[in-house]
Amino acid sequence: MKAVVVYESLWGNTARIAGAIAEGIGPEAQVLSTAAATAAAIAHADLIVAGAPVLGFKLPTEKMRESIRANPGKAPAPPDLSHPAMRTWLDALPAGQGAAAAFDTQVRGPFGSAAPAIAEALEKAGYTAVAKPAGFIVAGKFGPLRDGEIERARAWGAELAQALA
Ligand SMILES: Cc1cc2nc3c(=O)[nH]c(=O)nc-3n(C[C@H](O)[C@H](O)[C@H](O)COP(=O)(O)O)c2cc1C
Image (tube, rainbow, N blue to C red; front, side, top):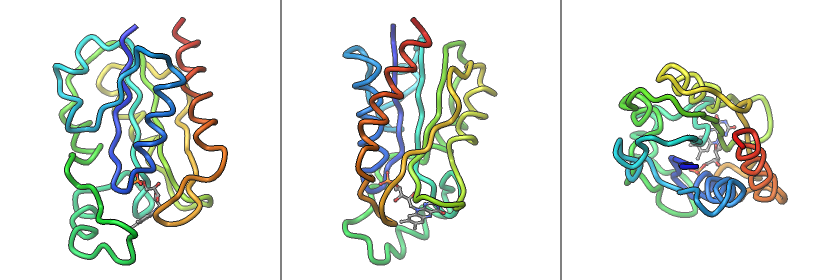
């Protein structure tokens, strides 16, 4: 099975969850940023899992990323804006026929989500959802991930693999 976990991550939380999901899927799963996940890299994938942080209550927009670039606030580290927004990656996603699942990282509370928008875009491109969109929780605005979230992500990855088996 070809499985690819694609992420957008400014401070590493979403990238860490992506890595844990891939571990749960199995050794064949690849973890790629939106820059590395080119059309060639994801071609013929049986499973695409895509994730991004929730910023400003939603899937990050270019405007939001630009405002963070201009004013990173009290960020503990500079944001990693080296790879495109998930939103931009999804806009360019070629049509496909594999399975898909979407996740986000977010603070706990009614502060929006990104995974449902990702799931919708994947389905629009022809992919079939194999799980409900999942959210993984950070303890503060910039992270770190809450205790247990890495393990939960690994378990979710294993569930995805099982759904396809
Ligand atoms: C500028 C900024 C805006 C944020 N807005 C939201 C939000 O609206 N809702 C939410 O649940 N979390 C919000 N968060 C928390 C992030 O979603 C969380 O830290 C995420 O894990 C960051 O992912 P990354 O480390 O992969 O970039 C915000 C964080 C920052 C820095």
